[in-house]
Image 1 (cartoon, one colour):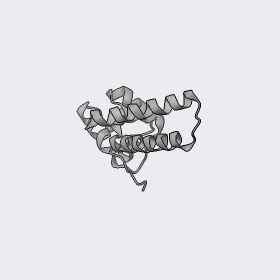
Image 2 (cartoon, helix red, strand yellow):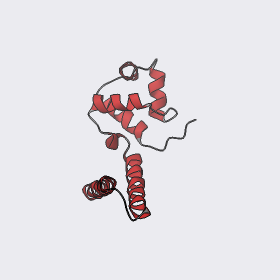
Image 3 (tube, rainbow, N blue to C red):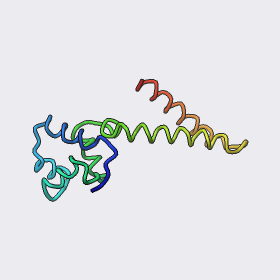
Length: 116
C-alpha cells in the first residue's frame, strides 16, 4: 500500500460525488483503464500522476493548492527557507538572482498572510 500524505483522496471523492460523476466516468475522463483505478486514487493506495492532477484541476476548476493543501504549504515553507539560505550564502549575487529570490519570498509571505 502506498502511504498517502495528502488530502487528495478525500477531495477527489468529494468532488466526484458533488459533480454526480461515477468512478467509471472519472476513470474515462482521467484516461484510466477502469473504475478500480479511481477507487485506488480515492482510498490513497495509488498516487495520482501529474496528468491526472492537471485533468482534475481543469475538470473541477480547482488549483493544485486546493487539491493538495498540506503538500502545497509544506513546499512553500521549504522554498522560502531555501530562498533565504541562498540569499545569505554569498555576498555578491547577480542582480537577477537576488531579484527572483526576493520576489519569491515576498510572494510566499503574501500567500501566508492571505491564508491566515
